[in-house]
Length: 283
Image: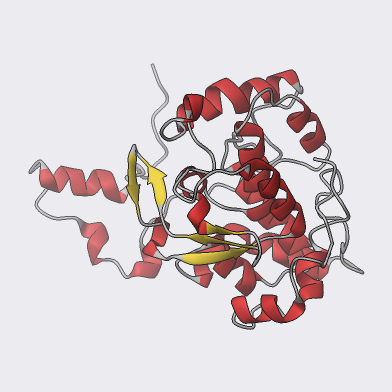
């Protein structure tokens, strides 16, 4: 026979299940909705699952086909969402201005506006400009940057994950579960970008805008602890961002005044942007 619950214990009921009870008329009202917002139960926030520096070279050595390898590299070096990259057309990529204009997203088998319904510009470091310049190879503005099978239609998130990313991780002996004890997915490239950016001096206000979050609070809730750790570290960690991937510091594409103009002053200088970017790349 199971041991009885202690007298002081209470069954934990989520707000969603309580509301479901109201919907199915098992309860007359949802008392959770009567509570002040600060007292309402909240789901435990999972810590972002990221890739570690030493794992990245091994991972990219085991990607066997394009455009998936380049897709993952661009995700890692821009922090863009998977759906935004799937929907990206060459008309949205300005290599001379070193910017991607995020205008749509491909999720759930349909095109829509980006998450949070906020269109934005993503500034590119020279590494990504050079990478995409090689990939374009005369394609038209209406072509997808990362097309699906045989160059037709959109990529499938399931195919990218199960046929490419997970097999590459297995071949590279990279565990599915990361340092935060959460499973790594394609979205982990975005988390890795954010972590390295904050740890190496990028302002969280700049990161929030760059990632297209609906508010600064969203960014702080997900990534704020990394910013705090960097601030507490004696001497900081400048220059250590993705040392294994070694993103370029070249200033030939982005100029200081361009970064200031596009970021609305949220980036204090070009130096800040390139400090987290590392030193050169062979990937």
